[in-house]
Image (tube, rainbow, N blue to C red; front, side, top):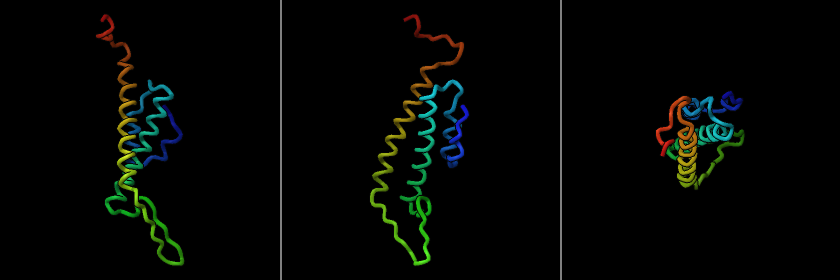
Length: 111
């Protein structure tokens, strides 16, 4: 599936997008894949922020001096986003698993 948005991904999101993208994805599954890739990139940036890499999230430079950016809830947001990410991946896997392989017989069809 050819999405115009794929250029927005960083390396982690791009790798996930490439891994989960399939020509047999319907539009809603493809949209979930895009959102999962965006979420992966956000988690990577939050990880950098909570690990002390301030440039991972924001960098503010002015001619008047230093500006302090205080983010109190970065760890809570990271935890919340991790839960959403797991749910997105589970739903994508469920949908892709429901498809089966083209031409493959369903072993449970006769039950």
